[in-house]
Length: 528
Image 1 (cartoon, one colour):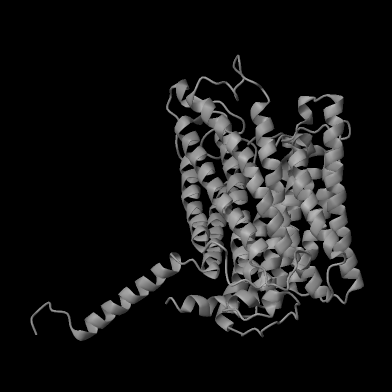
Image 2 (image 1 turned 135 degrees about the vertical axis):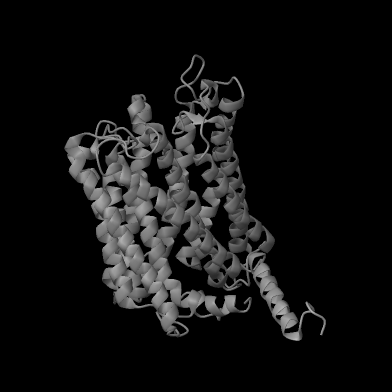
């Protein structure tokens, strides 16, 4: 045989390598709703890892008095803003809507897939590009010239190139959201099983439908806010800055008109997940199924009209104050109705307290605390706290960030047997819950106390009088980290032990448990 000529075994190994490469290439280019849901979940895990690093740096800065991280106060605020954006747009939304929505909505309504599979794939692949551009904006340093610094709200003093990257990132994420919203709306309205009427849809499907509708309407406002940033950066239009000719409240108004519906985009799918978990483990349908569905619709609608309840510090008129107070009270009443229906379902059913139920009850507790603290916001006279104060930050996290995280883990443990075909370890799942529950309350509950409550949250340094509760927050963050390690141990243990789950281990009544589905491991194995 001529030297250097490949042998038969070499050719076989090369063909096998090409087959594996081609298989994984077909996986990442797939239009199958399960493949795309899996990629959404993997992307959210990567984004969560990035946000965990940023959050750790954030907490390290707060552990002692003085500045510890490189840079100045502006660097700390920009890191704070970027952390919020990554968690909201690249962790929570891709998990709740992208991953859970993709995997579960089609089988829940008896559909064979999404209405527009290629659009579904394109919507996903726009997100990594958007995240990369946003991360690039963090590492762009301004030149020494003052002309390179752009005024703005929350991004004051950022280099112009960083603003460019952020604007393009927001635009790409908006296009991705629009494509996903249209796809879910058409799928739910047009591809349901013939026997499934709109009012009979599972509450998780209702939550995705309402969220997609709000998302589609919200994008026009999002575009207006991004356009204001662009005009400020590249024209003489002073629409954001405080220089002569600038309108002081234009961008804050646009931001909260953008951000307030986005809050419900994050929380509504969580309420759908909790409704499914509470119903299954209470062994009865949710009390007031239609009331819960229309409460979701009402919250999504009313959320568009409550943005200025975070802007009482600008001293609106009495009539404006009264209007936003009434709208906010309406949202609190609707949220209270949802909690009442969950509690009624728990009390009237034969509840079994498995791991998903623990996370659901934890969500209800956090949701109640957040709603009670938010009930003070309707009136500037009752709570004149500035919107960046720690008391408001604590309310925001209890009702939104922590609630969404607890709902994600409730959904993960609930649908894990469906997605993976395996059972998890109950002890590890409950240990994960208790460690995380203690950690999040160590971080955020002290922010309600009188001493830190009125302190503004976007400053790296702080008075010595609140050093103790700051350290409590840092300790709580490390407790949360320990809980996440337990979660990773739980997933690893399930993958190693490989205890096969039954077809419907929870005896659930929704359609995804009664129709055959390829578990994740066997589904991905066909590409390897």
